[in-house]
Length: 232
Picture 1 (cartoon, rainbow, N blue to C red):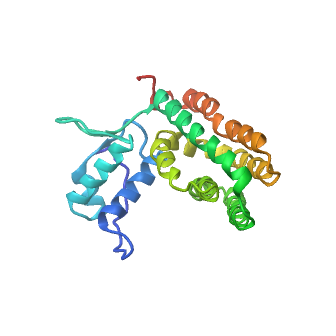
Picture 2: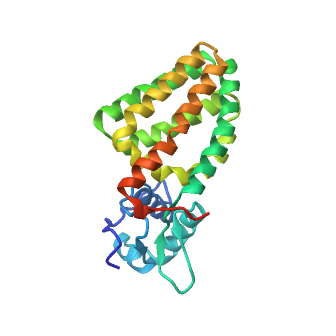
């Protein structure tokens, strides 16, 4: 279909199944807005472009639909879903609620080994920002928060955060074109508060860090209003 972006055929990779590879490729295309909201998707055409059978594409479509990235309707073309404002705000609320408790535990429980891992992550973040590498920064941003969960002794909650943050990921990724530096500085302030064992400061910095999403939505919507929806 004309709306579908051109993709490069996959090379065989031992480390992941074909289904996982297809999912990873399409997930990145949707996340990066290379496939923007409203883009029509064809199983047959995607399979042809990636040089795979239709089954792994069908599996990938299903996984993406569960994340809220694809809208699959019987007798209608599958398409990349619009960014629903209410879903983003709900996801932000759930994530903030979880990570506030993580901050409280981390402020008291992070070890020097934990701080060493976080410092190494920050060095990589700085390099990604310097190169303007949004994909790497997005991955390192997630890793930073995951490390905090692990250091706080509640690594298992990252699964809940990851499931809910899918609604915010496209907004976050798009904002990183100009907002990577700001996001990194938020991480720096969180780390400073945690090193000082200042629980309330760490919580306040986290709230400010995650709370930027509302202004980001306003800015992005002004430039790309057709990508967003107010539907509940």
